[in-house]
Length: 413
Image (cartoon, rainbow, N blue to C red; front, side, top):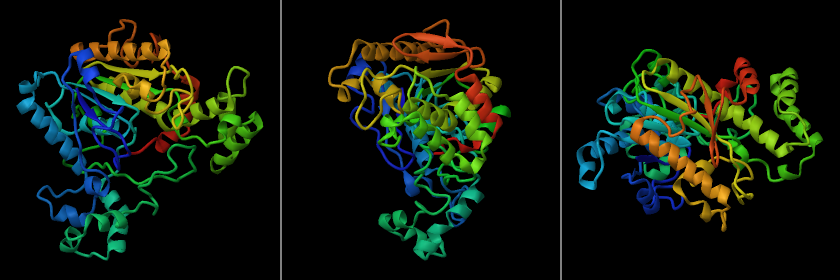
């Protein structure tokens, strides 16, 4: 199993304690794990016409993906020496690491280098062309003062970082993508359709039969953005909840927030914090990934699966969230819940065991362990201490959001 870390394609590394494979995991599952570092931010994903014209491939950007592909080639040549099987390589990545795996599922240079994929909490949008991204990134030339390739290549790392469009629209900082969107406000694209590493956008590639057709699990958590909600949200009243929804979605008119308040209503069985987290998570992640999974299921000969990790931590995790927040599933799989909750409950431990049971079977056979968990268009698995299935998670909510164009506001990068 090959691990791709998250971090918006901007930060992170492959050996973060609690957020990377560890000896206990390897011993328990009896798999060989590989993690990696790859170029990030502008050093890994700068697309500019000046760079493309100087390249042997006539393209630029996606250098981080190139690094990942080199790791996969190394695995093919060397992993037998570590007891691994080069004919049974499973990629798994979380957040932007999931986006990396999503991109490699459409990458011709990665063809034949892996045989399964687990895409966790990824972005659903990877369709920016090199020419579009290059226009967006002209801020680099403006800020650095460079007009030729020699000047660009002579910049220090600090100069490159400072010249990158972190806060210039469309921004690389992505500070808004964990909240409800404003109409026509989008973030910049780091991963692009460059014509080389990613020849055409993944969903289009799959429709044309040009992707890497392997078994895939597409997973998200129930309340992805709970990790980033406003500090006072736990004490919101329902009046504050309704006011926030109408204020934040005002640019879409009044009908959109009114309908969403009906779909995520006030109830004595829930809280404003939970409803706000679910609404934002569905809009930004859950429903868009449903679309990605549906397209893969429609065009892959291999089986594809969809799941949502719905079980909450046994207690609120400071700095992370109360509900099934972004990263709760990876923490559970790595078996490092005790780094966040000093005394994990039995339900916490059971989530780890169940995730490992399902994923271990998938790595070995291309199918999860639970026979009730069927391919994407038949069922969505709800993962917790045990596995249950539903026909369509949040059917009414996702139908409304997708019909009203909110796929365009899915996470990017």
